[in-house]
Image (tube, rainbow, N blue to C red; front, side, top):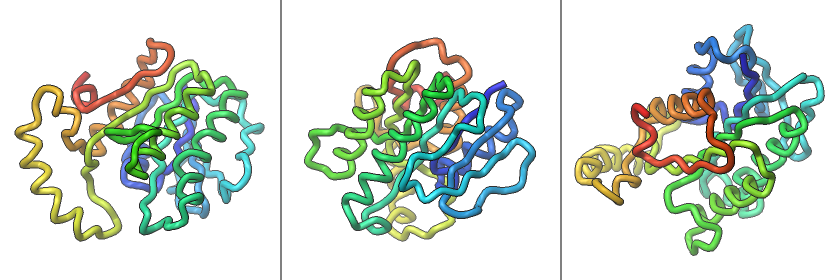
Length: 217
């Protein structure tokens, strides 16, 4: 059975992923890294409280098989650009670096459709930088997920997103061929895809995962 770390376990995708992993007999221990105590009580769950300003100490764990990175922020929440970059790039990189010392086999990173370090769009640029930094570590198996809009029940209310969801679902009906990668994805499907890929983990190197891979593959 596997030991896995979740980064961003309190976010939309992270919460769903945590729920599924706790119910999965293939994982014996789940480690979540949070700034304050937020994790539920569960015999499989270990919560590490950290400010993320320094490298997280994983020395007490015998082995780390997998890291799932579901981190993400917005410019509204994090207006400082360097702080934004630290969340999106720095934390995943340092966690992967430390986990490699414990035998890390697979790293799953939620990026974004259109991620590119040369993009003029700040969000896509930062996600691209994060992808590049993780690839530089030569992780045995790196899965990079590039979903379209993520759907699910958020705790926080986002007015514009609430308005957009019905339109996005309607637009999904017309996304075919190359455009299919822009299809919205429910976080339940994304979490299932991450776990499914982690269990099979046959491919080595970097694997990009798009919408067509999220559903039933």
